[in-house]
Image (spheres, one colour):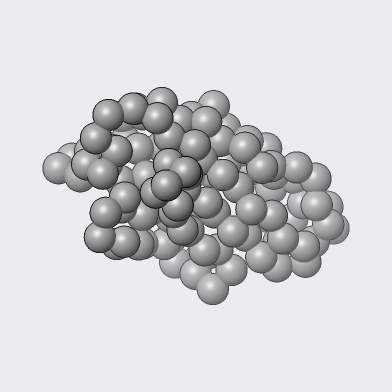
Amino acid sequence: VQLQASGGGLVQAGGSLRLSCLASGRRLSAYVTGWFRQAPGKEREFVAAITWSGGRIEYEDSVKGRFTISRDNAKNTVYLQINSLKPEDTAVYYCAARAIVTMEYGFWGQGTLVTVSS
């Protein structure tokens, strides 16, 4: 599985962004796609994940209500809509994939930088 994240940028606090993760490869329906982020000086953390088939979704508790993960299977793309952005959302956002039968994300995109100004 190959992943390409895009959509990051500089935005003022309170604004919104939609990140995209374009996936390619075989049997994408057998994978879970997730978003992670890594803020400066901090460890990478899980943000949200969605299955390609079945629509199972999970979020890290701190982003519930502001972040929405969705998918467009026809476009092989997973989105992360981020609303009411806060300066603490500043991070490099990565999309990743794991096989449904495992818990480890073994495929990673290159990351896209989100910078939120106060």
